[in-house]
Image 1 (cartoon, rainbow, N blue to C red):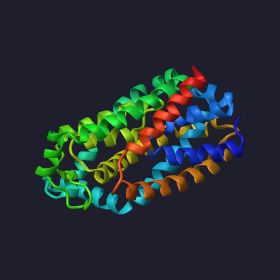
Image 2 (image 1 turned 45 degrees about the vertical axis):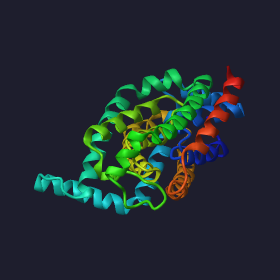
Image 3 (image 1 turned 180 degrees about the vertical axis):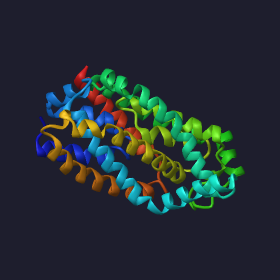
Length: 296
């Protein structure tokens, strides 16, 4: 099955890579392959396996860490959402953000529910994950380059954000619902092992004029219900026969994943106040290229 040492390492890996724009799914395939844990690699692409049941707990723990970190934001957003249902108006920035998150969550939720299992069984292999990780690096670099285009900078100038003092960016609440939908659809790319959910949604946000800080914040807020719902939806696997022999390891790994996720999001929120996606792009290009050579 899976040892407690392996569980702890994978838990830490999940907590970090789910939020860093370097693909948690890609690393959950590549790292066991690099260590020679072939039973885990093989279990990734099976229709049903102990490893997929094990990952359920890690996803729930990561989502809980995000909820705890952004708890004040979520209290305002949820309150604003129910206020719009009562008044049938969208007036405040929090009310608009609530509906932007709803709109952006729908396409990823529906498409993820329909295709997640199929994509995992087909693409959760080291050679595919390595290629997609390299592609993820290219996407991050392309996003940074596109952010500097004149028409994108013009969007930032027309709707200037007041939260960032280091970068001209568009206010998050000025996104329209079509743009939020595009960001939501971008999340579907994370179904491919090696493509980062946070990375691709940040790129979509940057392409619409958001600064790095707000693009990251929107990405993390958007990821929370998706990750949590996916974990809860799969919980019966963990408590069923697939979880036999791995529930203790799952509990321990989930604790490490939750702590790592909380520390990661705290670091990244500050990092993107002044930094860009470029370091993560370089990492993905290097790690992806080396892995392609190793596994092809």
